[in-house]
View 1 (spheres, rainbow, N blue to C red):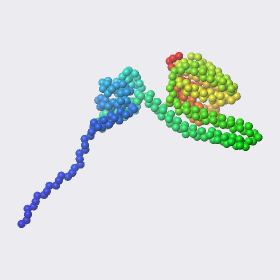
View 2: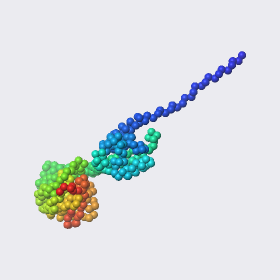
View 3: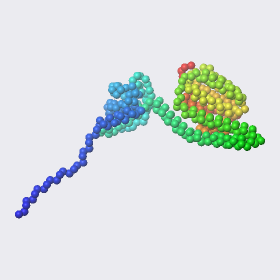
View 4: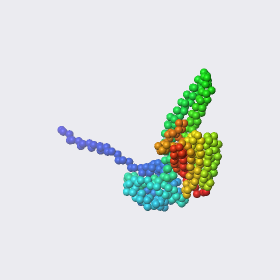
Length: 375
């Protein structure tokens, strides 16, 4: 007898891919908040209705407003011109990343500060469109950082060139030491003359090495310069008295013109004095037979001018565009850093420098510095 067929055993349901776990929005927001808090820029995140949903600590320090306070006031209201800030936010709401704009920010205490502001759209954050990130950077700090970075790059390049330039005087020093050693071991009839020549050569190369190092250190320390109000006329008179004796030994007379009432400039006297010494040394080198050095000062509505004039051999016209190039020199014993250092020091003081020259008639270096309102 045949058995009745048994009912089929039902198959277990096929395994399915597990559903994705729900996104932990709170965890993501906490992570984003921690990242924003570490930034050195002021960062604000705005919802589509311009409510600020994230406001990092640096934004609070820059503006003086807490998150609650800035939402009560409105981000657009603290920027000038307001229309520009409103336009930046509208473009970002439409999905466009804006170019950085320089705006004035009125802090909660009423002070104004220049800010670099950029607005960027944030798309698909938690599935929500229309959010905007606003990045705020203080212009003065941003420019200082750029200058510092540029100076570090410049110093790095100069360090390599300086190492190359130092090899020449070092080789000369080793050569002269060998000559001295040989002369002392086996004196020749012109023993004294040879010794004097070698010692003089050693002094020359050591002086050149010292000048190279001093110029490089002057450049390296510019980032540490702290300026203060200074009576420019009085400072220049003191400087002229200091250099008169040494210039007299080179048959160079010093003349002062227009130092009375030059006014007050914001300077770092030791650093600025280094620039003046480099200019005086150039003038001395241009007048090997002696001559006249004139320090002339005058003022305009906004600037204090100082001219250093010599009656030396002058500079060929084709050399003038190259004068501020590092390690370019027209002098056999020159370092090629002197005028470059002067230019950097003057620039650090907010000034400008200009050189005019006529062959066989002399050279004039003119420095223009900003003056304060004090007299």
